[in-house]
Length: 171
Image 1 (tube, rainbow, N blue to C red):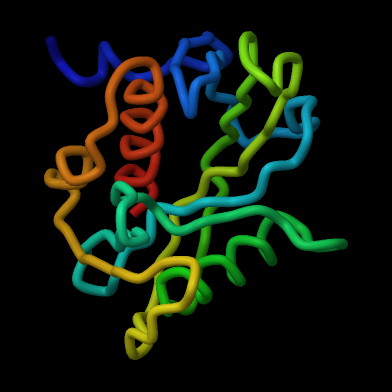
Image 2: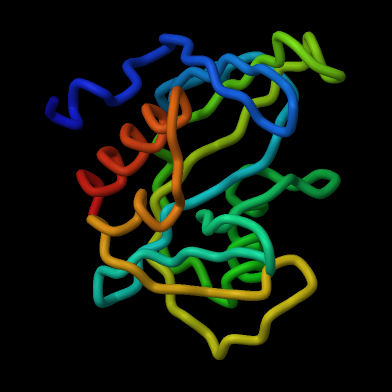
């Protein structure tokens, strides 16, 4: 099956399990109004000038794209810039909002909670690696290696396929 057939279409829900909870996640295009829900930060597929993608992780966690939650009065782009600098020691030179991931908890201790995260493509310049408490490793990979390194499966894989597709089209 071609990967395009697996990509998440707009607003279609896919189930996934995370930390003992069941969620429905859907892709929303980058248009106003943003999807309803609690703002849950910004994450980016970060490209180096050589076209490699930046991944980060903590000691026992899986590799992931840099990103995180907003601080008080911080907009989506400011969250992105700060989180990429903190987690990946990289400066966002240019960024494009590609869409949103809307996640609804349908079973678990956060049942009923709706989270919305902005998803970006970013051109970054790497700074010297100075691991912080949050992320202790940084790795550069080629686009065709990303999903294998991240070990993503199930419904969330469909979201990541869409995100990667949108990011490659943007670059």
